[in-house]
Length: 238
Image (cartoon, rainbow, N blue to C red):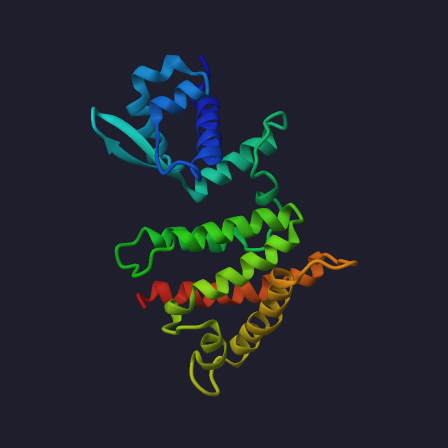
């Protein structure tokens, strides 16, 4: 029989691979899929233990069963760390947890923590997923996707700043004369990032094409400033 750490990895990897397709996965079904039938009788206890470890989110299902509704940030970090220490394991998120990330993992961890607070006025699921996919595509050198996901993020978050568009965030947040450096960073996102993304989104095919480079789409420092301010507002309950 496998150790708890081994089965933990198998379960987390399966959830990470399939949770985007299914809103919920039954723990018993997961164990059957990963070939661990000897754990079936204790599937409920195993699910609760994994949730206590902070690596998955679960929900009770009729018949005393446990459904898995998501893998947490800590769960993804566990997968990455396990894969690094066990090179034979093939983790699909291995690349996103090492040095070549667009959004720092500490920002994702803060956002996930805030998302679970009763005081949080916004549902951050989509923002977290956009950030995670941005990191994955940046690590895998999918720079067209990086530009488009960055554009999507800045279009998604204005309500947190009590604005209706990101242009308003860039021009008006903090009032005249305040947050000058913040406005400069937001101007880069509102102008350069937006125009680069729109160019790739709307360009029609021609006899010669050029693809974006890492340098062209790397607005990570500006995005970090944005997320830093966004997190401060959410922590303040605004």
